[in-house]
Length: 504
Image 1 (cartoon, rainbow, N blue to C red):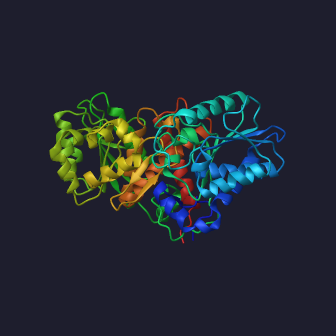
Image 2 (cartoon, helix red, strand yellow; image 1 turned 60 degrees about the vertical axis):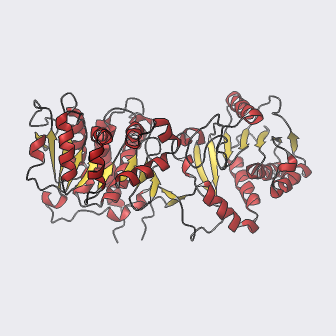
Image 3 (cartoon, rainbow, N blue to C red; image 1 turned 90 degrees about the vertical axis):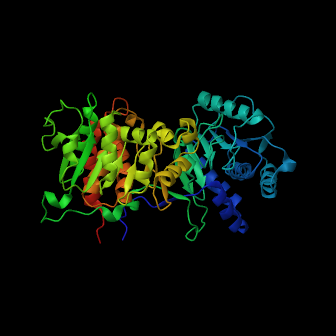
């Protein structure tokens, strides 16, 4: 039985799959349903119905959705101004019919952006999910003028399906894009709304499924939620001891970078690992962490010798010295589930011998690169990584044979079985040093407790962002939020998840 407090599993569909779905249900008046959902959302957003509504309609089906919404809002008694930017003869047939209904009902249409007035709401129906290029000409001008009008009027902007100018598949912005305060996504969510630049231009997201049954439509990916790993959220048996929850090692902490290894170690301990060993490269490193004396600190070489570890993390504060390279080689040979981050990834990218060693490992491995590290691993530019973050994560999986979390706005998790997710938790406060080390520790701590590698990665990524969100909700950040604060918040959040999980 699913915990009623869990978010629903949220399927993500790319444009090509959505076109197939639309073709399957072509006889169900989808444009009218989308227009009705848009009108209902618009009515909920309008504060003063005496003020007019501006609707921008483009040349395709997205414009048709806008025409339907215009008709319904006009029928509801609102003053509607429709700005149609397109060629009537080139419209799809159902969009043409929707436009004629709106005009026949008395909606006022303009062939250019209307003169300045005080709008109660601006609706963006210029482009939908198919746009892969930068808007140009009259469309770019309309986007700019809509932004100026929304700023001047301080009114909400509702995007239909996808803000115009945003790539709905990737979250990339090839040029100008309309800045929405709200986006209503028809049929299902699109991945580009959740990653890259998507969250910045979409505003608050909602979904109108148009009453379609997609139970037999395999999604391209999923929006990551607790439901994806809920079966592993189990309360502890009373008859437990520290050995019940595993021992892990954190390998890193070169000179001047000791804090990274300590952050990762503390996170692993506080998320529930039974024992955490820190293997530190700095020859002058302390043998005890005064803020977390439960950690067992030692030289890096000693960590890899005769310890009964469940999992090993390599990379936080590792550096790129010859000793660091040798330790990465040794870590790759360990028959343990392995988490590679930070300088371990940079070493991997710079030494072709290690790529084969990683790919041919029997035990699972996890890579957690940020975009610059991913670019080094794939021998490309950061811009290419960010242009299609999902494709980049999948390319890393194929090349290295590992589970991958491509960090950033809308972290993308891809697993070796071909599945992928986009994580919705997290906030800009996480853009600070040490956050990746905390994520590494959370994942490693879950591995210590017997979580499978893919589930530990999913839960670690989602928990990491949720903990930061909890702090912001409490008034801590986002500006000035630091990595160490996330550790205790993650512990509180994780225990709350376990306590409310349905274990039947």
